[in-house]
Structures are given as C-alpha cells and as structure tokens.
Image (cartoon, rainbow, N blue to C red; front, side):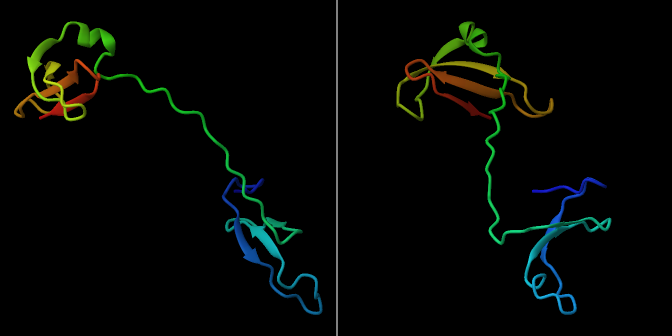
Amino acid sequence: MLFCPACANLLLLERAPTHLGDVNAAGCLRFFCRTCAYIHGVGDRRLTKSVSRLPRKVVDDVLGGEDAWALADKTQTMCPKCGAGDAFFFQMQTRSADEPMSTFYRCCTCKYQWKEN
C-alpha cells in the first residue's frame, strides 16, 4: 500500500492513459490519488508483495488468571475436552442483572476452561 505524500490518502492503481504519440506510456501502471493530483509511476510491471508480521497483542486474562482459580470450588462435571470428572468452578455476573449468572469451569486434569450460561 502506498499513501499520498500530499494528503495522506490511499493511492489506487490504474493503467496510465495513452497519450498522443507516446508509445511508452501506453499500458504502464501508476498509482494515483483520488483527492489531489498526485501520481506515482510504476517503472516495472512486476509489483512486489511484502507481508509484514505484526507482533501478537498481549491479552490480559479477564477472569483473574491463576489467582482466581486458587480460591475456586470443586465440583463433579465432565470436561468436554478430556472427559475427566472433576473441575473447578466459579460464577460471575457477566450480563445484565435480570439474566442468570455465568458459570466458568476449569478441568482439574487438563486445565481446559469453558463457560456455561
């Protein structure tokens, strides 16, 4: 992606229009700005594609991390991932007050977490 140095809008790609008697300009590609008169010619017909990898965003655990599970109660329920029969659980109000509480589970064996409304 290229941006216009004059107005910072995204430049679009098009074929250059044929000028009278100018054989070299016919069929060439160029970037142009829709807002101002800026044009950036592309000398080579091959355009390169570069992929930039952005670093992963660090996401905070909204349930409180490991500390929240240290005080959680234990119940007998089946883990949907490994099939174990014990899991830690706690309840939290995640929606409006007239809705029921959400129950969060964490398997004692494989540490898989799931939620039931």
